[in-house]
Length: 480
Ligand code: PEP
Ligand code: MN
Image (cartoon, rainbow, N blue to C red; front, side):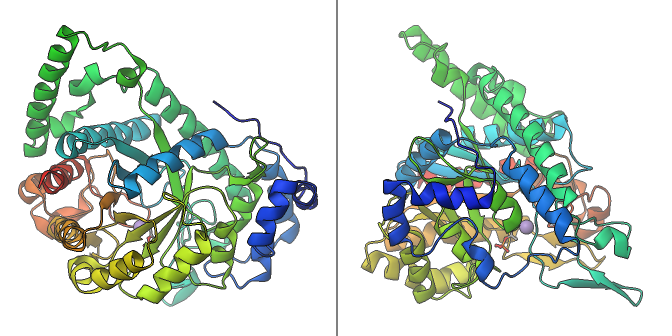
């Protein structure tokens, strides 16, 4: 059920509302001096400098009065699902673009990614015999952390592109690369459309289990992944007919609808603060820009602004963990974000290559186990595996991605912890951004094929066939 969210008119009012509420006052004491704006007193990495402060404040006011994108009740349901994932009872699938963009926006694009996620989730449910929690990197995944704050082309140095809600990638001019606060409003508007489409597809009959075959995209149909999916869909359909024959109601809501959640990197804190509201039911703060927010590998440092902002949110939190994180770093994250050790509150998203997983992850898992900490372990097998192809394209290899996933499952099995989910940059589009996989090995001729449909605004994505093929690999590991 949708919650009615109080919408404070200004930041000052938010603080007042907290002080006047008993339950919030006690959680405030526990959380130190936290407020939706307390991050402003800390050093912030990766946040752009806005030259026009007045325009920025105007946008913040506008956004803080806008409708919430997600509702507290939905967020609580996701938290419950994640709690089950921490116990190995559900499996989490995150998927979507590296960066959403204004010019790639279309209903078809959203529909295609959504249907590939449905296909993958059928494959994973069948493999793991447990429910799959579906989370899109969608309806908010705009702002990008960059390894360098500037880019130089032909001797000209300008700010790096930071995502469509911050600045414009091309043309490569000072004007385009200047951080423009109005882009936050444009991004918000696109999010409302995206969510409207996602909500309609989730509950309007499209996700009905009787449509398993209809989810396949035309260009996937003839590929090895496509035919493997078709066979699985037929097997599932046969089981459904059997269940129907013995009296299971195939028209019941569980058969016709899916729960679909959204998540993005919590990077642009001005936007996130403006979307943060007190839920009238619980009196607690929810960032209503997405169900789950994660902190990236580049901004998760204790004492800095991002760390400060997310710790006070009720939303479940994700944290990216590379091979640079020590067991002590991870424990500090868990102690700060989850002092009450609530299952499902924190998802650790490891991204450290197959070798990193095998050499570094066991010590982290053991430290977490020793302290009896509740964690959802998720693998992001893509961010540790980027490289530049000889023809200059940023790419990833299907084999490296699969190897990291295999290592992730192996290590968790050895340590007796639950491999709780996967986090992928993928799209339903027929792009050529990652190399390898059964279909691409034939059609792309390796790196030379990258140029033909390379469309990403940031990192390379698995295309639909690669995503489905990878889901089958994961299903196999889930079955072991
Ligand atoms: C991302 O998920 O797009 C990302 C930037 O990840 P990371 O912080 O792990 O590099
Ligand atoms: Mn990325």
